[in-house]
Amino acid sequence: MDLGPFAPYFAVVEIILAIVLTALVLLQAKGTDLGGFMGGDSSSSGYRTRRGIEVTMHRATVGFSVAFFVCTLLTFVAFGQAI
Image (cartoon, rainbow, N blue to C red; front, side, top):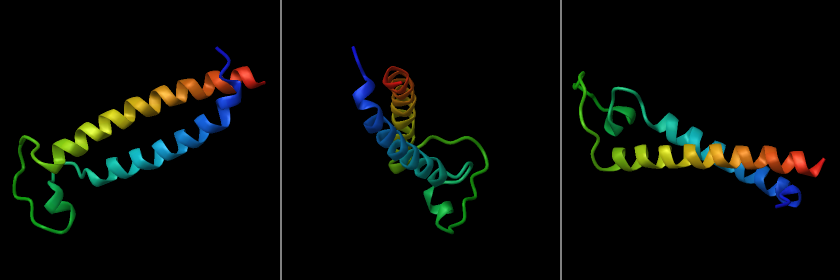
């Protein structure tokens, strides 16, 4: 399968995935909940379960990480075939 013609498209998708993944990681402040990120007080210091938007953001981060990895591999293969 010749992926060479798709190389520029893979590169654009990879940039978009990198921006989204960076935003998702930065929104997840370690040890605080979403309210603590916005300036609220987070008094819980131990392990706690994720709930609501936090679990959704965690799952989205994992999904985008996998998509970024696959896209990176495809981009390397596509640019290797384009040369």
